[in-house]
Image (cartoon, rainbow, N blue to C red; front, side, top):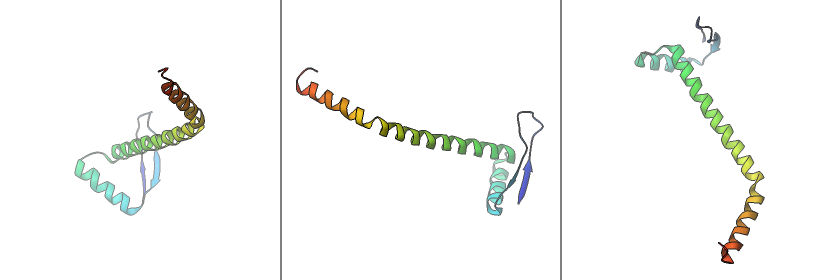
Length: 89
């Protein structure tokens, strides 16, 4: 199924999109039950999905950065342990 939607608002873009029949029917049911415009529902869904993807990227970037500083962090921890053992802290 091909669905084209757009808005005359200059901040909106027109998009033609192909949806699987099942996804389209499920979406139609949800927007009908909730009384919201299909366009708004799709915008909110994409906004949510974009946030999820950004969080996944941040988590991946954080894991990479964490691995990069692992050795220096271990060295700092070792030095702190030695200071504690010596009673300096």
